Image (cartoon, one colour):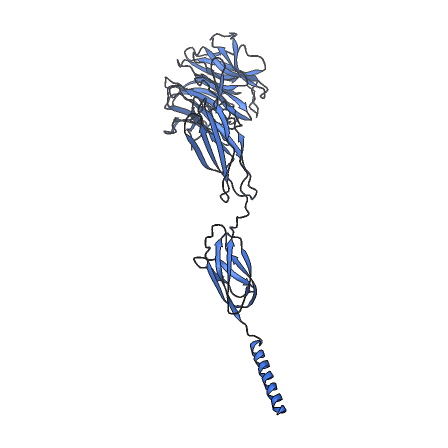
Length: 501
């Protein structure tokens, strides 16, 4: 009996051991399921088509249209679950998969720009706080830095103390912006917003400036060099000055038109020149030329003409003379030189069918001065093939006198330096040329002469013949007598390229 009981116990242990070996035999696993959702952090919006995988590797799935995913048949154990999606920072969650169970994992992904920093608060550089501008044109300058190197887009908002008008300039990619239609005597307030289109926009402090309250009914125009640029000014008979163009732009050769009550001028971008017009307060600047631009042997030496009662502007382009309406329409070729010489100076009569031209070679020499009619026919020759330099050309309102300057030293060099430039008046009736620079100091040049409004005087530039000294604007009487010592009066210091209408 004892033997039988022992036998049966051994049989029972064997069965238990056999059962235990069946449960843990090699190659057999117990499985679970991982499921969950991928959303954006903060907004909690589902992120579809997100790649979800595990480590150790089981299988890879993608979220559906509402951000849900399911990974089935995952052997039990510990896993790192990763969610990856373009434009988002990858998410990683640790989880423990149990046999025959479902474990839930939620991912909240941040945009890939989550660590991106916004631009710095814009610094208002110019105009400075409470600055009083001497011109109706302003160049706004501002500065913001993006430490991540993202492009910065600016928005400029300008208000004034006169009305509710708001000027809004958007999508500015440079850190400067020019506006040329300010009002005289008005105070302005301005702010700049900077954005990298990733973070929230950053707003600058409020800036304020004002525009001088000036009389713009000034008859005299001249140019002054500021910060390396030519800048146009107007002035009254008492010498009160008003700046018309920005010192950040190269503007020169002002010509006032009485009928249009506007001023035409040349403006250079360094490589090319265009003709612009503006109101007499410097506002409402309009470009006239486009595809055909003024050009010559030296952009600083070319000139154009806008007769006071005409809508036509005459300008040279190398060996051709063009005219164009002041609105930029109606471009016409008027004349082309027959010998290939270049046209540098133009003076069109306001009352007669006469245009005076000065031509020269590529170096500015071999000068000829002659007249043509509006159809391009040559009428009269004043100078032909002369050595040395000449500048300035102006026809009197009576069409009897022609004003110009010429370097009687006949000096020629690569820098176009003049040694003894004098002002001459040619009388068409008598065919006599008069020198009205008898009072000119030795070692100086008289340049760029124009008639005064009453034509009793010539207004001109005088400077040392060293080519680098300061220039000043003078006037001298026009007395058509040989060897006359005409009185000279200084009008404006540090000024040149005068015009007086």
